[in-house]
Image: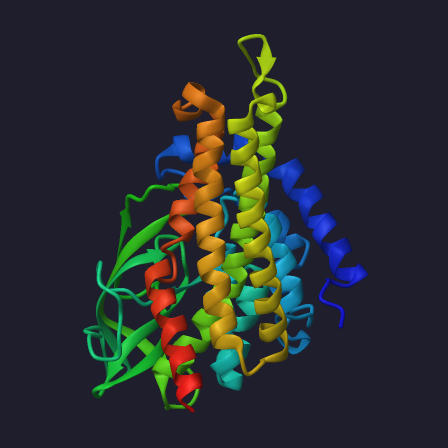
Length: 371
């Protein structure tokens, strides 16, 4: 059994890495950070990704995409995580585009999926309504008569998105609705630990909307979209963890203390080794998640949860130890180590905290063992 990516997928990965190294260095990330919301994302980097066709990588050719698949999205995600790219790729593609691809009607795909694939529109997924975890019983945002009313926060890229897939209460049942954010929607930018990935509060006041695809179990549809996104975010986290490890190792091999390279001290060696081990554990889980996602495997739920948990733990740990390895300078504004720390903390909460995913994994395993 071959558990590695194909030569074509590795070539794609290499091309994306070269593009991001050239067009999305930390100087660009710092520019977005210093803009303090005035420039919510790096438009030139986003345009480059669109021009390369990456936004349509997993979109069928009938809707303007490349017709590739989940594995191609995984290698793209890993490189986006490595570069800490300040672009709305995850919101628009992992979440909105995948929801439309999986559950949209033909008309909805023609209208919106084509625009997401071409980069003409930016999409997002609006689930949360505060600091509590969403569930089928606590959805307050309502859908009735073709209109949505309520409030969603925090919504990733909600301030720049053109459409949102919104979790709504439709007659007492959870459903997903497509909302054009240009009408009857108020947007308020929210402050987060990582301003290079903007978030917003969306307030819907009788906003025109339509249910996504056929009416059915909206919660099941949301669950599937989030499971796919969990695997993709895990690859971002693996890429980020690997980059943070390389950053720490690079500094340890050039910084002298007491007449010796700090990399020669046992304490630093142990830090780097621990970062590597956690990163490799996360990588193996992410690869298994990718296999399940690509094949729509029966174990996607537990594979996605395991990928999400290991990826979050590895990236946060690597980002923290990277700062520690840099010592006093690692805590300063001038240090680039902050970018991985900010992104690691943000990604760990984007589609639910590790605690929520651990509970999900436990429930799934208990159900399988009881069967």
